[in-house]
Length: 227
Image 1 (tube, rainbow, N blue to C red):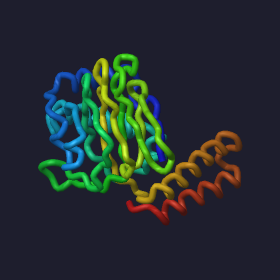
Image 2: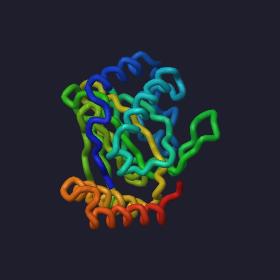
Image 3: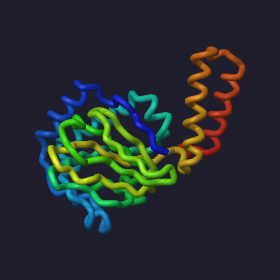
Image 4: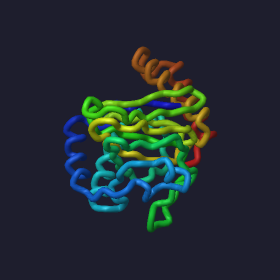
């Protein structure tokens, strides 16, 4: 399931976040790479756990906490602290798959990576290249979104960032463990939730069909969720 989440941050939010992270310390992006990714990755990354990364991550998490679409699509149980990367001219990230388990450096915090998310933080007109290309059973999709918009996709997907040929691509990225492990089950719940929301708007929350479908949603969530 690939879901675009528009306006996680508005223009002011993006500007505030960029002030924080642009002033931080940036290092070779392979500090968080596994052996396979290290062969394919050419970018810079904000130092994990640095004051800028922590402050920027808090801004991202606060924004996600206010996004009903993000919650409905992800059903998050645990979220890995947001990280930040940037790609300059000639830099990219060849085809790879994310590690199944992510461990926060210097802690015992770990997650199973069910979903990956990229939050774009640069105007797409300001750079060429830098598309996020995702391959899965839904086909191959190329994603390059406005600043403040995000895309959520299965961590099991093959994906890459095409080389940047002009400008700088800046983004936040994170992984999360969902309450619902299976992507197909999670997709069914998301589709059902969207249908309930549409019917509620049309018929009202007290309509019998709306109540029954809401009950079905929660019973399926109760069956499938780890919480």
